[in-house]
Image 1: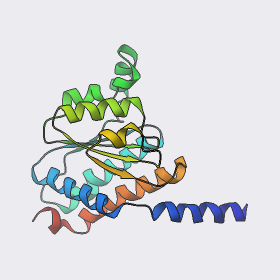
Image 2 (image 1 turned 45 degrees about the horizontal axis):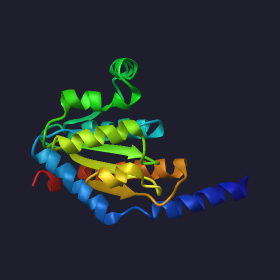
Image 3 (image 1 turned 45 degrees about the vertical axis):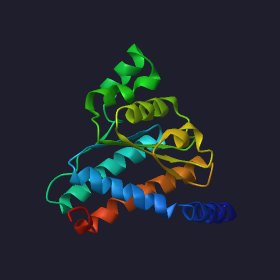
Image 4 (image 1 turned 90 degrees about the vertical axis):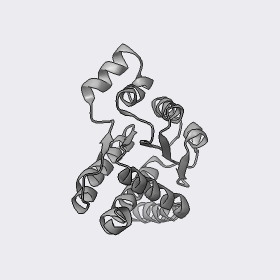
Length: 190
């Protein structure tokens, strides 16, 4: 067991080292623009990525906002269970996010999706809609990249196919995004 734990940690460290620094900085710049223009960011994913999306929105909406002159406009599309189940039941599961974006999304806003495979049909459909409606699109994916890496305007690829490690690093990226602004509010309000 101890060897397995050491192996997992070692593999996690190499996965962590695959964080694309330039792309990460670009996402931080996008978050700054979203705040400065009083736009909104929508974050969402499936499974563990849904939990990461909710955590990240908490960090932006509470943690980052507590350091700024006004609140950050942000929303996780994973939180509206009644709406999600109505869209999934009445239309199709691939409609659960795009159906919400049709109500909320406006040109100049942004969407950020997280997917290890990069091929979740509900995420792909939402990013396609966002691209067609002048929203900035950001995708965090794993090594397989998938369709999301082809269609998103900003892509962060984590060099692993292991779901746990990729989701861990996606959460680390979310903390990098949030804490870069929490610990440096002068960057965003300049």
